[in-house]
Image 1: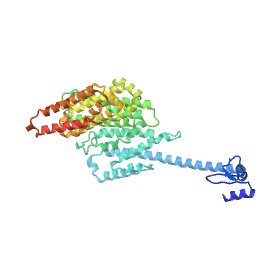
Image 2: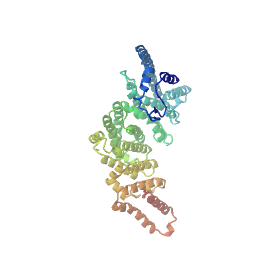
Image 3: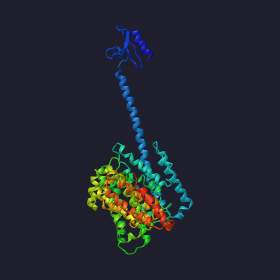
Image 4: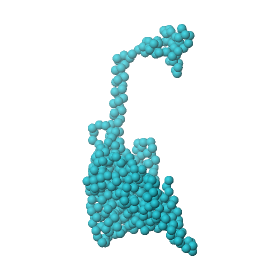
Length: 505
């Protein structure tokens, strides 16, 4: 800058003044500085005189230097991708070894050799998962629930798949070969685990531990949607014979409980996997319409299973843990399907999905599907009397559907909802009599109250209040000597909870 100022003074450009924030030009006639016009001043002449254009030799040298830098960068990128491809092959071999380890018996796991192999692969999986972890993902690698290295590897594969749309070039991608094998291996391992002797304790069974189940299925849907046609076909081919067996058992008078438990556990795993896939709806770089059709193919199998699970012999097994796990899986599917295809933002889309569902099972619009969901909700509330988990998840789904403005309006058109609003008593829903389900009882009446106040209908309000008035009349006619009994106490507490839930606004 000093050299430039000296150049200006030596060449005596008149009245040139410059400030970094307020460029002014001195006007000798008016005797003050005024904002100057760049093109009317001497500044262009100064720059052209001082900054000579580069020579052709300098330009050629700069281009050569830039080309060398670009080649160097290209070589570095190619080298890194070569390393990544080699790593993919090693990871695939590692997954095979991990699957073999899972098939070992408990005795083999207690041997020092097997434990050493497991520790070795767990360390490798953690290292691979944290390889070039982007900001914000390091915490995932340190998550305590990811105690099994298989899930670290699933997370790694998921991140590799997510980066595919941003890759350029015609070189073949090894992910096309390995990812379907990973998805098939994981699904097979989950189905095989249903035959293992797993404990019925809720804190230990993988289908009862919600957090662990979510961790297992968090990354897996991205792998399925990478080669969605292959993955969906594999799921359908595995589900069809199991579903057929379950349908046949429904027609029998009696059946082997252990066999039915295994079948229901396999179906529960498949439904959880399908629910996780439906949850993300579609992945980047894939046709939304084609994926909607495949979503419909998978969803139709689950919806067909719902009717089977509540018919015949299976309608007598609501007290079995395996049946409860299956129904919780179905409710999870309903929740994820609703968010993707039934919510207020999806009312005018998803035409391909409903067209395919219409062909497969006759459900061609949102209203019919909502009626299907509500009938299952009513069935659960009628048939489950002691399972707090199933009742709680059922009411959560009911409240989610009712809370949406458009879906809530649609619910009021359904005969099943009108029946629930007018007959919300323990005679129709036995869980209301269970003291352990008191909190669920409040949620039940909160949902009913929410639906009532969606419309300004005196008839609807009166029909919902009639059962509560009957409780008031019964308590009024109760002798004073009976008011200290547990039955009256629970009836009064229940009535207060019902009234509390009936006024959600």
